Image 1 (cartoon, rainbow, N blue to C red):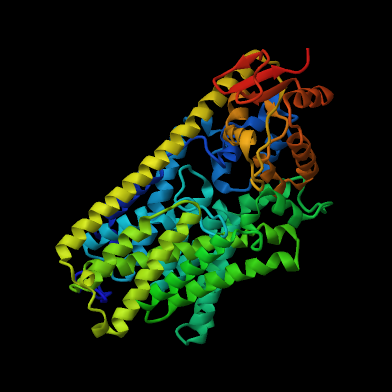
Image 2 (cartoon, one colour; image 1 turned 60 degrees about the horizontal axis):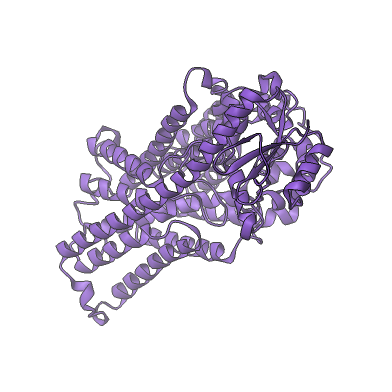
Length: 577
């Protein structure tokens, strides 16, 4: 059941970059994956990016806004380059182009690694790309860590996924100098991801030395070149960090308490929901079993997988040892992203091999796994998809070990019928995912349009420097009943960009404490105070007491009085005459 010669020829072959099918599969996988996730703008973390491309911190109207001013020190080189780019390109178009580039980079990395693992035939490449693009394990974020994978909006944090996969290919092919050089661009994009990459590469190189394949003196020039390139990429990032007025300041609050209150999935293992932990265990199991079925003669892939697992395990215990923000901000639990990327890579290689096998049993199992990988990309149902892979791999193991004890007729169905049925089923599952995702984007877009209307009115008809009180929606709390209307507040990410006006406080914008910890007490005190306001009258009184001119409410419960402006679901009230 290992696959046919057509799918997996020997490693002596032409350069993948010279093969048209490589680029065709890259384009196919990129387009398919974006069709599945859709594109949303502005969405989620774009709340941190729009003020940078718009240079809002240079506007006099927002000079007193601590959140907006903190974004001067958002230390990602990509956004430093794109600072003020809204003057020459619409951010909606720019972010879509960047999303395409980010997704294509990931597909290039996947296909390069698959090429080394024997997926080189044109048909095999397209099947492999389809498996990656439709896999539920690539949708949204990684389990028990929340690292971004194939998401519906662009952020800089997903670009290093593709760089990591290309670095993995360099490791597998012995191109250690290039792998070391890639740490620099990763640091430029996302510093903590570069730390992960450095840790993993250090383990790989240590294994190379201990195994006798490399000598330390031979690696020194590669390490020196990688370090020089890394320093060049790091200089602008470090300059930005050093210029931050909060740089080096001692904290007067518990940083672990902050990340636990704000968004624990990146940092704290124990509060993570049980289903995510079980899913991660299944992910690790599928990874290791897929690796057993793959060709890894020098164990480089095995070492990389275990290095990623070790990195995650370190992240579990780090918060119990230290609350140092520099260490906590390494987001070590988000390194589950690296494990999941390798899970999808290895499982997709195995399934592709089975798909092109001459064995009916292998083709049946491949067909079931192909559909199983695409099932349930969201929430606890993700356990269903990875659980189906665990079950299929268990059957494969039993069939391999006891070949004469499995007379099940469904394992002997006609290969052509099985393949056709699997493609139909995969198309239906992928189609359903597309429809659901498009429905969610359309639902959220309705809120975004209304927020845009409010922001345009605010810019046109309110005084410069006006402040707005909005409902608070916490990520770490469960809302029921009428409080569910608060979720409309998380879709206000373009408010400052469009309105050139400030929000009194917003829960999501509290991420700025990670690079501007001096803003912690303002964020914590205001979010807790506003969240306790249960009625419209209480919010008006709070606004008047704190000199906030405008209060925003949602029509479900709080628009009975005459607002100064309203949309279908959002009302704006004047709190001060």
